[in-house]
Length: 451
Picture 1: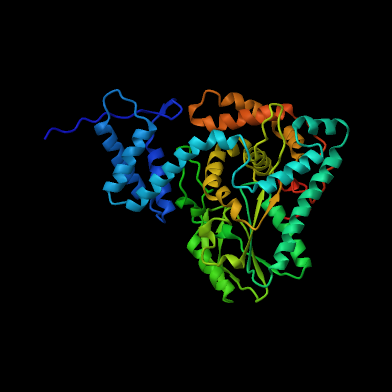
Picture 2: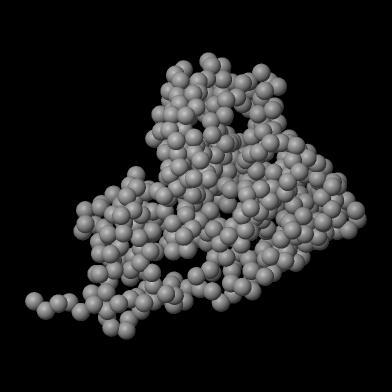
């Protein structure tokens, strides 16, 4: 039989219509990410399957035809199924379907608050903003112009602390049945400060809290999926050893001792059986985690034994065009400032990585917000003028830098949107009115808490 003619693939058509260079790594990473979702950790298998995909693509692709993303994905599904990787194929198909539905819903969802936050909570936050004349950027600017920045800080922090007090009282009422308190929420929502404040209130009530740091349950760095830019996906719950977390929680609640692993973030390696841990009959396990609400995180523990708290900056403030400021943009700015100040991480890298953050939270965090026992609003109107002083110049530059880069369309859209918002806000460079116990200090520095 004559040898099949193969036509090398050099470019691919994205869904936006942009034509970008083709790279096999994108296929490898997509397959590996699907494998990780079902427990697979062998990247060499993913690389071999990607080779098969490329071979089939080049053998069937017409000469001079530039394949689309959808055409390539169809072949990935075919290779996975025909190679006997049914579970990985299912995970890949489900993820692909999720992304398709997410694209269809994006316009509708971006125009209003998340359907996953109860509307009574949104209404309470909006009502508070109207009562304090902070429901539009223009109103915020007006109060700052009248020298009321310090008062805005006091009013905002008082509302945030009242939310935490309410949560502590709810936990006290259920103390006879609870064994785990979970603080969850998307990246940079303020979980750590909320956890510290809540722990302080519960301790005053006589409740002993024993923290379990689930970051120690990360798999080794080399096992995390990465993209063609070398950026690893740490934002998925499957980056954690979920079976081991459940086993340890079950044993701890049963009164047994476990040895918690230690994850070394400098080397990217986990060391098992490091720290002995046991809880008393009246102790509560405290978990502060991005994925605390993810079903797989604590599925071994009955719901009545868990109190689930969700933290999100539910800021209800409109810009000059009448559009609500996006919560994800607030969190992006917080993370940029924190990562630059405390982790020596370039803010531009934070922006470029944010698509991973957002993709994972849309799949694994935000859909569970309405399953919580209580929601704490961590939105701070006064953070906008502070962030303008720190980040406005960066966003102006990024909005231009990514304009014609088809591989960075997500970064371009976010940079342009935040740049337009910050242009409307009155800057506040004097941060002296922000107290050391403010949630914002978790990100900008100067906190009285140890993080």
